[in-house]
Length: 365
Ligand code: F6R
Image (cartoon, rainbow, N blue to C red; front, side, top):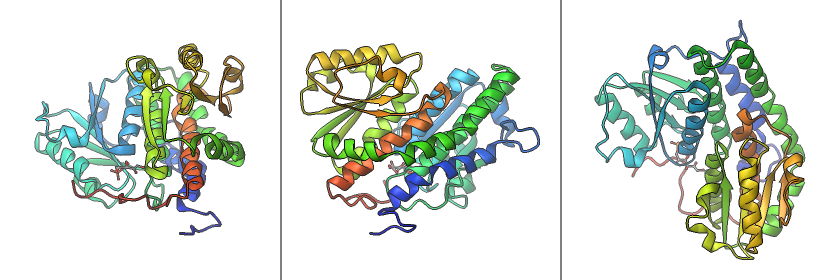
């Protein structure tokens, strides 16, 4: 299929739309009069002492990222649930609590069933949806639209980063409302968030090395591992999902600290181990994971900034990103993993926009 606007595939077009999509999503969350992130018109969220999030697939990884953001910034405890497990687990649901559902389509059968279960149990429902006239949008008490426009590629890209943007701004608004950050820090983080589209545009403008690395080091592999720590961990999971669904390379995402507890036995000289290693407080930890894997003869690929790259050695390859504030690492580091998956899939001749066995919206179990 030939995508519009001169892009070879819709997936690539949608990856390139992200600077605009993120800016638009942010625009919906910032009060134009005050310039501050605003809470939605949903008083239950202001009162919430804990939050339940449920979703599937890529939207689930957005929810997992949201947990890191909400707990760190707003000190709000979050439970994240795979909707498909949640609905059948006979979960303990407390009336009056608040639940947040995340979905591109707003029609995913398991997420919708989870939402209905919560509704029947008397919870207050907020949804982050891309399709604003979807079933989930209609059946929620309030929605936060991602407004990313139609997503044609089956593999979600631009809606994922739009979801992350909404969650990031919401975490900030909640952090201020709950008194866990100063107005000054809120202003700084709002500025950092506002700078993300430009950082993304810079990565997209200079993505030739990612393409070459995907072709030479990832596309020939049978299997790949993505490692991350902290808020990079859900992005590692998302990178593995993107790679497996578009290129059909078996891939797994791991919390880097968990890697020693079994998966380390997989290390050999053929399998790429792709580490998301931003220069945040956890950098020394992931650098030591990399050193250990290298010592075992592993084939490591580093995704991080120049300062981090200078502190590691023995790599098979690297992707260099701009120095990124810890707050926006999930957003910025989503791009290289999407591009890696896309270019590896193209190099293998896969049908990138319509991977085998998949549909865009999973409306049946
Ligand atoms: C993967 C992907 C899927 C969806 C999942 C949930 O690239 O797109 O994992 O994220 O099927 O779909 P929504 O967000 O429509 O509920």
